[in-house]
Image (cartoon, rainbow, N blue to C red; front, top):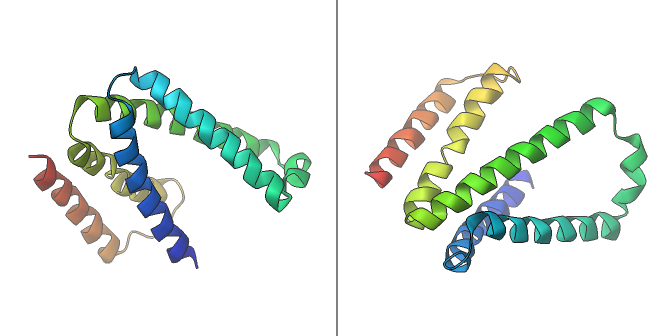
Length: 137
């Protein structure tokens, strides 16, 4: 089931980039990011209340809260940079570079989370990096 959710995520991430590229033609990229973020915020809270997740708020540990806040800050920086880049260049090139996040995530997972760096994973990361290079040159 996780792979199905990951595939849905990839499809909607692709749509996000295309819709954003169309939407940011005549406005400041930071304003565009703020509008998008507001929509995500409202939609997320609607989902929390629809599934009854609000009852778990009091059970979040301080450690979890700190890391979720840091993750939110990282997301914000990522989105601001992505929208600025998207406004300045072709969506196909910017998204290719942005998807190097897969490689960076793998590296961080190996170094920080202690996940195994299998030969398959290393070869895959190299191929993603090379593919990105080919797409943007």
